[in-house]
Image (cartoon, rainbow, N blue to C red; front, side):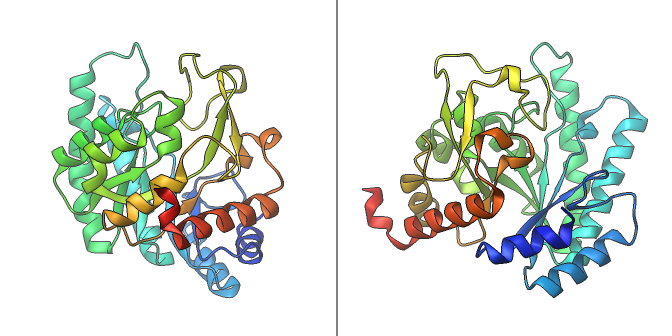
Amino acid sequence: MLLKDALALFRSAGLDGAEVIYQDDYPAAIAPSDPNSPRNAARAAADAGVPIIGLTPYTTAINSLDEAQWHGAVDEFRKCITAAHTVGARKVRVYAGSWHPGDAEHDARWGRLVDALGALATDAADAGVVLCVENHFGTMTQSAADTARLVEAVDSPAVRVLYDQANLTFTHDENWREAFAVQGHLIGHAHVKDLVFKDPDAPFRATDTARVKAEERAVRSRVVGDGVVPWVQILPELVRRGYDDVLTLEYEYRWHPQDLPEPAIGFRDGAAAIRRILANPAQAS
């Protein structure tokens, strides 16, 4: 599926916008290696009537201790910020470097991460873009507490938290009340997805950053509203705290197609569930 086809699918499913992958070798994406790709994406979005609200790069070396790798990753992020400006996107997802249990030199890598985001914050502010650091395994901000600590260390309105309660749930980090307590005042974007546990007592493990391998998974993906994440409580609380911006319906069919219905169905049903919750916040009580 090409990007234009994905945008048409989003429109037919009743979505209001798109968060688009920024990665080479994936057809429904903006390609970093192709200088024409952002302009082509902007035209495709205009033709589909589906604005691109955010970009999702997969860069992880912004905490590297290798100078060449670090500078290369920062430069790739700068290109992504420029691409976001070209397509009219206001948000760029950030992986907070690469970090897995057993990795060494945490403090040094954390310092490189803060330096990278501090430098990129200026570019983002100039482009009208917010860098949104995700609660994400395989990075230095798996937990809500660490995500908040990083954003506060960078200390720029152009760097905020990307709240992902499903990630926090399957990694056995903060529940939604705990997550709001430590990072609720810093949220600049949110991903909404759902899951059920195969084994809720299994310890979390993941050797990759972008996805959990099939043999490591203790959960199954579900359409929003069909899983264990309490969005009926979370979304009204997000609004109560002043969040009045887009939500990305994150549909992991790319990684786990065996768990989910076809995207045309899953996007439609997930979006309908989110709209029902937002239209009836009293049900959260």
